[in-house]
Amino acid sequence: MPRTARFVMNNVAYHVICRGTRKENIFLSADDYTKFFSILKRYKKRYRPKLYAYCLMTNHIHLLLDPVSTASISKFMHGVCLSYAMYYNSKYGTCGHLWQNRYKSFVIQNDQYLINVASYIEYNPIRAAICSRAEEYQWSSYKDRISDGLYKIVDDFSF
Image (tube, rainbow, N blue to C red):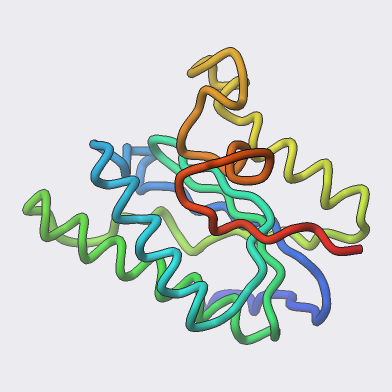
């Protein structure tokens, strides 16, 4: 049975979630997170989506994206996920699928919802009891947005 086509709209942002197969960890070392960021930067430069927030958890990722076109979000996610899976399989001597199904994407319908989703994404490590304050978690956009984070890949909200 064929998959249902995605509902994609122009001029809206998306909350994108991608989870490891069987909810297994996809980041096993700090180098894995760093590699993911280098891949994210490469595809951000190629497809030019605005990236408002992100959080890399051990077994899944959250991205808050505003693509330049309806086709670019799928190309962006395909490139990022495929490149990281190839890196992961090569590094750890595994093969096959790294990601569980295709990514999920949720339309962000207004400015307040965009801000709420960004907060939800950046506070994910607190809800998972990994840290007690958002600025303690180095793999989210919180520090990039408010101060001198490592990766400097987030875009400012522009309303």
